[in-house]
Length: 300
Image (cartoon, rainbow, N blue to C red; front, side, top):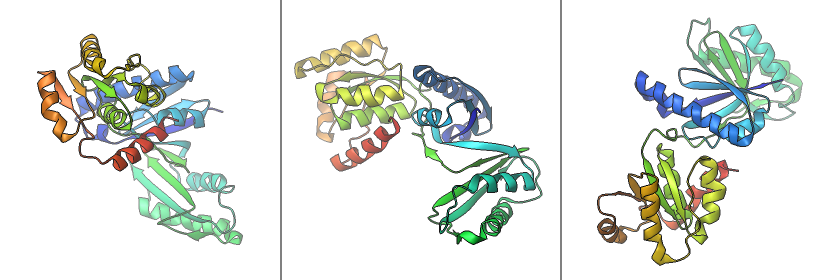
């Protein structure tokens, strides 16, 4: 049977209605681009603040969606009518194999849209009591802070979505809503700088050194299947020339460089009117490594 995935996004929902519609259009296009690359097909529909994707291979599609900028999290969900009995019966059925003896759990309920005869807090409380009653012989316990199993219930108008896993996405803004840049990728610091500008909606062409080639092709290229990635540039004397050529060819409005504070004046003089970005300038090497590790994990 086809799986349904609930796609959540953050910043987009805060925009004005015309801007939100434009950004959502970019987000849908980026999702479809990723699906085409991976050989997946799916149907998309939307309501305020969420997208719903219907696909044949839910787990695989969820992993692909985790590398689409603009998405904060995804969950494979089970849809039921927003009826108290229907929610209870389906939740207990789905929870049965997950709530083995001695485990802790929490019910997270959220209700939006329409009129319902219960509040979010009342629904969470009552469903928690239903779980304890149904599986009273298993020694289950409620743990609202660090549960072994989290039962998520999202009531959205006439339909309710039940899920057990929330997989994080990169967040930010969809690719394409901001300008075009070119980035020098020499290692984790350069790769993270490019990633952070992509996360703000920029299309980033990548000029790679031998030490950054795997980072560009195996990680950044998975976040943007259409990213322009230059052949590896081994000679330091060639970096500036290649950056300038790629910048002109890709109509870039700025350059992303792994600069230290002391390097900025010389770089500013070299690149003239082009805007310089160095989003990692205030980060230690340890902070860069940690943030890059977290970003790269989404690309696997």
